[in-house]
Length: 209
Ligand SMILES: C[S@@+](CC[C@H](N)C(=O)[O-])C[C@H]1O[C@@H](n2cnc3c(N)ncnc32)[C@H](O)[C@@H]1O
Image 1 (spheres, protein in one colour):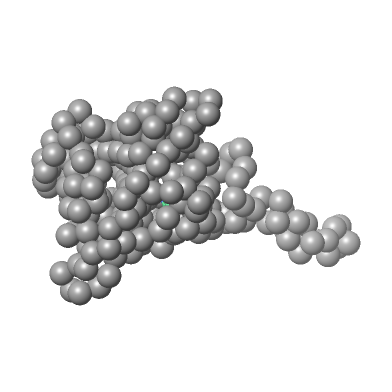
Image 2: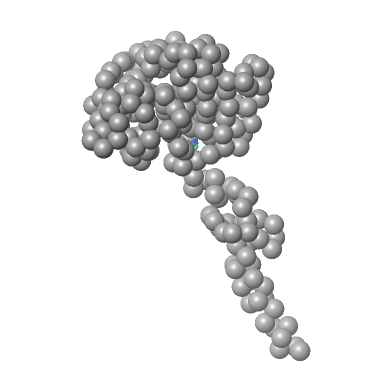
């Protein structure tokens, strides 16, 4: 019996490792069948861009450059505090959907939509931008990073309908030639670049410019 007790620390550590910390109510595994709740470690691995808001005057210009009009569906990938989604819904009366993975920003942006009474037009989904089906969107906005834009290119190309516009704050899409590049200063005097692409053809030899 004493011998068995000497094995206790080893068994304990083995259980701890095998459960991914789950026996103490926390976890460090990225996946797993039973532990579906996103733990901070999951979040860190999925959060591929930090939160830096687009200044409001740049938001307004991005939507103008995209020529948002009635009937458009605007998707903001990595929607932060929801300012692009809210501006699109409030100013243009269009359906606007943001995708955000940070729980604090999710809460904050949903509260703002509620305060603005825009729930009938605007919504924020807690979803990884790399898994979003872009096909319902006619305008996609983003303020991400160059390598993240590149990772999104296959989905943009395969899923967006002809005539859809993609607008990116500060970062291009690699060798995709933009239809328009505009350099502007925000109200604090900081420089920003806005890129616009338009999807021109249906699948197959699909084009953009
Ligand atoms: C630079 S901020 C842009 C915020 C907003 N679009 C704007 O222009 O003001 C990027 C946002 O992407 C979010 N983000 C990062 N990785 C993400 C992911 N994998 N899925 C969804 N959102 C993500 C961040 O939490 C952050 O709020």
